[in-house]
Length: 177
Image (cartoon, rainbow, N blue to C red):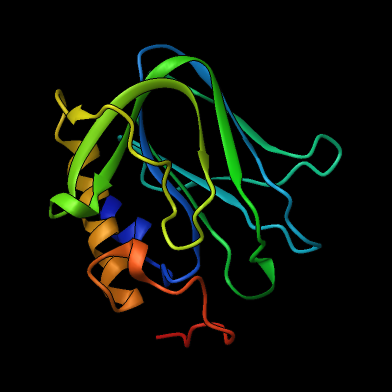
């Protein structure tokens, strides 16, 4: 049985459009809005204790990806390889303020968190919401322990230690391993 980290890293991360952790203290509805082309990517959610992703398809009628998340720790990820890549920002809303977790590339990928009800990702070189007044992640080790290797792998596969220094996207899709 693959580990949760293996489940999260089973595809190339070079075309990752969205990546962050989420610690919810109650059930919330996560809504992600973007403007994908005809081949919309899927939104993947891995919740603590799950052995497989929850895959959310793009709802063209409403123009978003949406799912209910139980209280707990979750990894939110959207890979958009090849024709499913799209330009422009991705926004997300949660309905109520919850803890958002990302890994800070300026601090050796240490997980940091802040509380917010929404966020925006608009830098094609960095697939996470910009840092706000962040603090260290407290509580369970699952979320930071699962998230940090993903950020490290993303930087390594893109060939740079600083995600913000990476060109937006190569013209050719990444080679498969």
